[in-house]
Amino acid sequence: MGKVMAIANQKGGVGKTTTAVNLSAFLAQAGKQVLLVDIDPQGNATSGLGIDRLRIEHCIYDVIINGVPIAGVIIATGVPLLDLAPATIELAGAEVELVTAIAREQKLKKALKEVKDNYDYIIIDCPPSLGLLTINALTAADGVLIPIQCEYYALEGLGQLMNTIQLVTRHLNPRLKVEGVVLTMYDPRTNLSMQVVDEVKNHFPEKVFKSIIPRNVRLSEAPSYGQPISLYDPRSRGAEAYQELAREVMNNG
Ligand code: ADP
Ligand code: MG
Image (tube, rainbow, N blue to C red; front, side, top):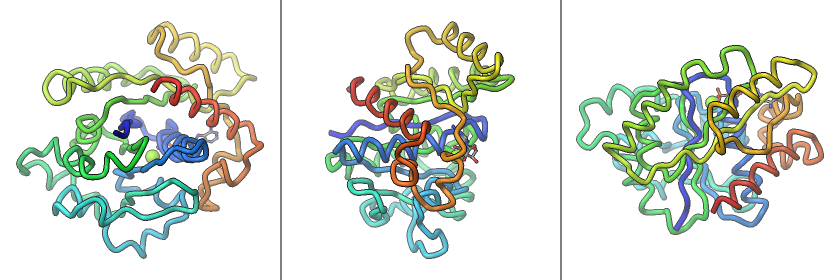
Protein backbone atom coordinates (compact mmCIF):
# COMPACT_ATOMS: atom_id res chain seq x y z
CA MET A 1 0.00 0.00 0.00
CA GLY A 2 1.28 3.43 -0.96
CA LYS A 3 2.62 5.88 1.57
CA VAL A 4 0.82 9.22 1.41
CA MET A 5 2.86 12.34 2.12
CA ALA A 6 1.54 15.90 2.28
CA ILE A 7 3.95 18.74 1.52
CA ALA A 8 2.59 21.51 3.69
CA ASN A 9 3.38 24.97 5.00
CA GLN A 10 0.83 27.77 4.92
CA LYS A 11 3.53 30.23 3.88
CA GLY A 12 3.79 30.77 0.16
CA GLY A 13 7.07 30.59 -1.70
CA VAL A 14 8.89 28.29 0.72
CA GLY A 15 9.50 25.52 -1.82
CA LYS A 16 6.47 23.25 -1.38
CA THR A 17 5.82 22.77 -5.08
CA THR A 18 9.49 22.55 -6.01
CA THR A 19 9.90 19.87 -3.35
CA ALA A 20 6.71 18.00 -4.32
CA VAL A 21 7.63 17.86 -8.03
CA ASN A 22 11.31 17.00 -7.65
CA LEU A 23 10.93 14.57 -4.77
CA SER A 24 8.23 12.78 -6.78
CA ALA A 25 10.44 12.69 -9.87
CA PHE A 26 13.41 11.22 -8.02
CA LEU A 27 11.26 8.63 -6.25
CA ALA A 28 10.01 7.61 -9.69
CA GLN A 29 13.55 7.57 -11.06
CA ALA A 30 14.44 5.17 -8.25
CA GLY A 31 11.83 2.78 -9.59
CA LYS A 32 8.93 3.71 -7.33
CA GLN A 33 5.44 4.11 -8.72
CA VAL A 34 4.44 7.65 -7.74
CA LEU A 35 1.27 9.74 -7.86
CA LEU A 36 1.61 13.50 -7.41
CA VAL A 37 -1.66 15.12 -6.34
CA ASP A 38 -1.92 18.85 -6.99
CA ILE A 39 -4.40 20.47 -4.60
CA ASP A 40 -3.22 24.06 -5.03
CA PRO A 41 -5.63 26.09 -7.20
CA GLN A 42 -2.52 27.79 -8.65
CA GLY A 43 -1.70 24.46 -10.25
CA ASN A 44 2.06 25.05 -10.21
CA ALA A 45 2.88 21.36 -9.84
CA THR A 46 0.64 20.65 -12.82
CA SER A 47 2.18 23.27 -15.10
CA GLY A 48 5.66 22.54 -13.74
CA LEU A 49 5.35 19.04 -15.17
CA GLY A 50 4.50 20.46 -18.56
CA ILE A 51 0.76 19.84 -18.41
CA ASP A 52 -1.29 22.52 -20.15
CA ARG A 53 -3.96 23.38 -17.58
CA LEU A 54 -6.29 24.79 -20.22
CA ARG A 55 -6.49 21.39 -21.88
CA ILE A 56 -7.39 19.45 -18.75
CA GLU A 57 -10.93 18.19 -18.83
CA HIS A 58 -11.29 16.87 -15.28
CA CYS A 59 -9.15 17.87 -12.35
CA ILE A 60 -8.87 17.17 -8.65
CA TYR A 61 -11.75 19.62 -8.12
CA ASP A 62 -14.15 17.14 -9.73
CA VAL A 63 -12.81 14.46 -7.41
CA ILE A 64 -13.11 16.46 -4.19
CA ILE A 65 -16.37 18.27 -4.93
CA ASN A 66 -18.25 16.11 -7.44
CA GLY A 67 -17.13 12.67 -6.30
CA VAL A 68 -15.59 11.75 -9.66
CA PRO A 69 -13.29 8.70 -9.15
CA ILE A 70 -9.68 9.89 -9.00
CA ALA A 71 -8.68 7.25 -11.56
CA GLY A 72 -10.68 9.32 -14.06
CA VAL A 73 -8.49 12.42 -13.66
CA ILE A 74 -5.04 10.85 -13.27
CA ILE A 75 -2.73 11.43 -16.22
CA ALA A 76 0.74 10.25 -17.15
CA THR A 77 3.62 12.76 -17.13
CA GLY A 78 6.86 12.95 -19.12
CA VAL A 79 8.56 11.12 -16.25
CA PRO A 80 8.28 7.32 -16.35
CA LEU A 81 6.41 5.92 -13.30
CA LEU A 82 5.18 9.38 -12.29
CA ASP A 83 1.44 10.07 -12.59
CA LEU A 84 -0.35 13.31 -11.80
CA ALA A 85 -3.78 14.24 -10.49
CA PRO A 86 -3.84 17.78 -11.91
CA ALA A 87 -5.34 21.00 -10.57
CA THR A 88 -6.93 23.83 -12.47
CA ILE A 89 -8.10 27.24 -11.28
CA GLU A 90 -11.54 25.67 -10.82
CA LEU A 91 -10.18 24.34 -7.55
CA ALA A 92 -10.24 27.89 -6.15
CA GLY A 93 -13.95 27.41 -5.47
CA ALA A 94 -13.45 24.19 -3.54
CA GLU A 95 -12.35 25.85 -0.31
CA VAL A 96 -15.74 27.57 0.03
CA GLU A 97 -17.82 24.70 -1.38
CA LEU A 98 -16.28 22.26 1.08
CA VAL A 99 -17.50 24.25 4.09
CA THR A 100 -21.03 22.85 3.88
CA ALA A 101 -20.11 19.41 2.52
CA ILE A 102 -20.68 16.26 4.55
CA ALA A 103 -17.47 14.66 5.85
CA ARG A 104 -15.72 17.62 4.30
CA GLU A 105 -12.30 16.78 5.76
CA GLN A 106 -12.29 13.22 4.39
CA LYS A 107 -12.94 13.79 0.68
CA LEU A 108 -9.38 13.33 -0.51
CA LYS A 109 -8.70 10.41 1.81
CA LYS A 110 -11.74 8.61 0.45
CA ALA A 111 -10.75 9.33 -3.14
CA LEU A 112 -7.17 8.12 -2.66
CA LYS A 113 -8.28 4.83 -1.12
CA GLU A 114 -9.28 3.60 -4.55
CA VAL A 115 -5.79 4.00 -6.03
CA LYS A 116 -3.53 3.64 -2.99
CA ASP A 117 -2.58 0.08 -3.91
CA ASN A 118 -1.35 1.16 -7.33
CA TYR A 119 1.41 3.38 -5.96
CA ASP A 120 4.44 3.23 -3.70
CA TYR A 121 4.20 6.94 -2.87
CA ILE A 122 1.43 9.49 -3.16
CA ILE A 123 2.73 13.06 -2.75
CA ILE A 124 0.26 15.91 -2.16
CA ASP A 125 1.28 19.48 -3.03
CA CYS A 126 -0.72 21.72 -0.66
CA PRO A 127 -1.87 25.32 -1.18
CA PRO A 128 -0.40 28.13 0.96
CA SER A 129 -3.12 28.10 3.61
CA LEU A 130 -4.42 25.99 6.46
CA GLY A 131 -7.91 25.79 4.96
CA LEU A 132 -9.97 22.73 4.16
CA LEU A 133 -7.84 21.65 1.20
CA THR A 134 -4.75 21.39 3.39
CA ILE A 135 -6.84 19.72 6.13
CA ASN A 136 -7.97 17.18 3.50
CA ALA A 137 -4.33 16.49 2.65
CA LEU A 138 -3.34 16.06 6.30
CA THR A 139 -6.34 13.79 6.90
CA ALA A 140 -5.37 11.60 3.93
CA ALA A 141 -1.65 11.49 4.77
CA ASP A 142 0.58 9.11 6.65
CA GLY A 143 3.23 11.79 6.95
CA VAL A 144 3.68 15.51 6.50
CA LEU A 145 6.84 16.99 5.09
CA ILE A 146 7.40 20.64 5.95
CA PRO A 147 9.61 22.77 3.70
CA ILE A 148 11.18 25.73 5.47
CA GLN A 149 12.96 28.45 3.56
CA CYS A 150 16.34 29.55 4.91
CA GLU A 151 15.23 33.17 5.22
CA TYR A 152 14.23 35.77 7.78
CA TYR A 153 11.20 34.71 9.84
CA ALA A 154 11.74 31.08 8.81
CA LEU A 155 10.02 29.82 11.95
CA GLU A 156 7.19 32.33 11.82
CA GLY A 157 3.81 30.64 11.46
CA LEU A 158 5.19 27.21 12.32
CA GLY A 159 3.38 27.20 15.66
CA GLN A 160 0.11 27.53 13.81
CA LEU A 161 1.05 24.74 11.40
CA MET A 162 2.08 22.41 14.25
CA ASN A 163 -1.20 23.22 16.04
CA THR A 164 -3.18 22.29 12.95
CA ILE A 165 -1.21 19.06 12.56
CA GLN A 166 -1.89 18.24 16.23
CA LEU A 167 -5.62 18.92 15.84
CA VAL A 168 -5.81 16.71 12.76
CA THR A 169 -3.90 13.97 14.58
CA ARG A 170 -6.26 14.18 17.54
CA HIS A 171 -9.58 14.38 15.73
CA LEU A 172 -9.26 13.19 12.15
CA ASN A 173 -6.15 11.13 11.48
CA PRO A 174 -4.25 9.52 14.38
CA ARG A 175 -1.77 7.96 11.89
CA LEU A 176 -0.38 11.32 10.81
CA LYS A 177 3.30 11.85 11.61
CA VAL A 178 5.69 14.68 10.93
CA GLU A 179 7.89 13.00 8.36
CA GLY A 180 10.47 15.73 8.53
CA VAL A 181 11.47 19.30 7.83
CA VAL A 182 13.25 20.12 4.58
CA LEU A 183 15.40 23.23 4.56
CA THR A 184 15.15 24.97 1.20
CA MET A 185 16.89 27.77 -0.69
CA TYR A 186 20.00 27.45 1.44
CA ASP A 187 22.74 29.91 0.55
CA PRO A 188 26.08 28.84 2.05
CA ARG A 189 27.49 32.33 1.56
CA THR A 190 25.20 33.92 4.10
CA ASN A 191 25.37 33.71 7.87
CA LEU A 192 21.62 33.95 7.87
CA SER A 193 21.17 30.62 6.08
CA MET A 194 23.47 28.92 8.59
CA GLN A 195 21.64 30.54 11.50
CA VAL A 196 18.28 29.34 10.18
CA VAL A 197 19.61 25.78 9.85
CA ASP A 198 20.74 25.84 13.50
CA GLU A 199 17.51 27.40 14.67
CA VAL A 200 15.34 24.87 12.83
CA LYS A 201 17.45 21.95 14.06
CA ASN A 202 17.01 23.19 17.64
CA HIS A 203 13.31 23.57 17.13
CA PHE A 204 12.81 20.14 15.53
CA PRO A 205 15.49 17.88 16.97
CA GLU A 206 15.76 14.61 14.98
CA LYS A 207 13.23 15.80 12.43
CA VAL A 208 15.33 17.77 9.95
CA PHE A 209 16.33 15.96 6.75
CA LYS A 210 20.09 15.79 6.26
CA SER A 211 19.72 16.83 2.67
CA ILE A 212 19.53 20.62 2.59
CA ILE A 213 18.25 22.10 -0.67
CA PRO A 214 20.55 24.87 -1.95
CA ARG A 215 19.34 27.98 -3.68
CA ASN A 216 19.95 26.92 -7.26
CA VAL A 217 18.82 28.78 -10.34
CA ARG A 218 18.36 25.55 -12.31
CA LEU A 219 15.60 24.56 -9.87
CA SER A 220 13.73 27.79 -10.57
CA GLU A 221 14.19 27.47 -14.35
CA ALA A 222 13.00 23.87 -14.69
CA PRO A 223 9.22 24.53 -14.31
CA SER A 224 9.16 26.89 -17.27
CA TYR A 225 10.43 23.97 -19.37
CA GLY A 226 7.73 21.74 -17.89
CA GLN A 227 10.35 19.42 -16.43
CA PRO A 228 11.48 18.27 -13.02
CA ILE A 229 15.14 18.90 -12.27
CA SER A 230 15.89 15.19 -12.82
CA LEU A 231 15.26 15.74 -16.52
CA TYR A 232 16.10 19.43 -16.90
CA ASP A 233 19.55 19.35 -15.31
CA PRO A 234 20.33 16.09 -13.51
CA ARG A 235 23.88 17.22 -12.73
CA SER A 236 22.91 20.45 -10.99
CA ARG A 237 23.36 20.91 -7.27
CA GLY A 238 19.62 21.21 -6.91
CA ALA A 239 19.15 17.81 -8.56
CA GLU A 240 21.74 16.19 -6.30
CA ALA A 241 20.03 17.58 -3.21
CA TYR A 242 16.56 16.38 -4.21
CA GLN A 243 17.91 12.97 -5.18
CA GLU A 244 19.47 12.71 -1.74
CA LEU A 245 16.18 13.78 -0.14
CA ALA A 246 14.38 11.03 -2.08
CA ARG A 247 16.90 8.51 -0.71
CA GLU A 248 16.23 9.67 2.84
CA VAL A 249 12.48 9.44 2.32
CA MET A 250 12.84 5.88 0.99
CA ASN A 251 15.02 4.95 3.96
CA ASN A 252 12.29 6.22 6.28
CA GLY A 253 10.01 3.62 4.76
P1 ADP B 1 5.57 27.20 -2.72
O1 ADP B 1 5.00 26.05 -3.45
O2 ADP B 1 5.83 26.92 -1.26
O3 ADP B 1 4.79 28.46 -2.91
P2 ADP B 1 7.65 27.14 -4.75
O4 ADP B 1 8.20 25.75 -4.74
O5 ADP B 1 6.68 27.49 -5.81
O6 ADP B 1 7.04 27.48 -3.31
O7 ADP B 1 8.90 28.13 -4.78
C1 ADP B 1 8.73 29.52 -4.83
C2 ADP B 1 9.66 30.11 -5.89
O8 ADP B 1 11.01 29.86 -5.52
C3 ADP B 1 9.49 29.49 -7.25
O9 ADP B 1 9.68 30.48 -8.22
C4 ADP B 1 10.58 28.43 -7.32
O10 ADP B 1 11.00 28.18 -8.65
C5 ADP B 1 11.67 29.08 -6.51
N1 ADP B 1 12.50 28.09 -5.80
C6 ADP B 1 12.06 27.10 -4.99
N2 ADP B 1 13.08 26.40 -4.48
C7 ADP B 1 14.22 26.96 -4.99
C8 ADP B 1 15.62 26.71 -4.84
N3 ADP B 1 16.07 25.73 -4.04
N4 ADP B 1 16.49 27.49 -5.51
C9 ADP B 1 16.04 28.49 -6.29
N5 ADP B 1 14.76 28.80 -6.48
C10 ADP B 1 13.84 28.05 -5.84
MG1 MG C 1 3.17 25.84 -4.48
